[in-house]
Length: 220
Image (cartoon, rainbow, N blue to C red; front, side):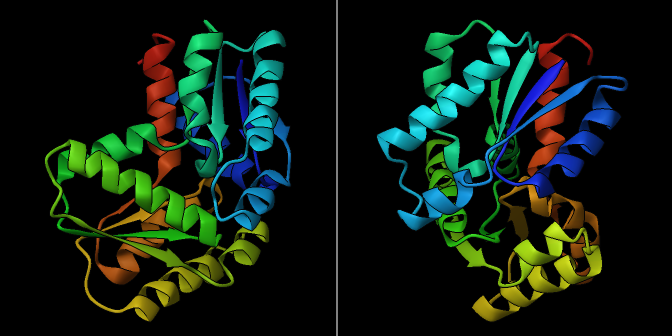
């Protein structure tokens, strides 16, 4: 059983689809706190001690409930993953660590990070910049892109509207990119259609997280 802590119901289906590809038959247990994203966004994406504790309590709920693995399906809470390593023997995956490792290996020169929350765009961009620098790609340019209307489209599961919102956000910042990174699980279903629309590779966190979970549980 895989427990997933979500900040929005819109991230459930994308993760379920990715796990179905990598772990057919795996049971997904969804734990939702739909204020996790807005509350973190309200403080600029900087996690307060109270927000960290809230996420840790949700992860603990999954662990004590018997999950074989827990995934934090909210990009803004990635730093909590380092704490979980010291607290739990159950593997806990952050939303995008494996995606960032893939990006570092690809070594893009200019990459856009698209998100439906300002805080998520800034947080993911900051962590990706640090990851690229650690991987000796400090010259890479990471551009955070807030995409207005993306959250609403994702909530309706309206993929054409979501693709349109993400593409419009990219057009709004101008310039060309050689890769686009989707910051949030809820936006991941747009990856393939967005890549086709803009003719640029698009990476999504759900796929890489699902592969990492499968490897950890010895099924891949």
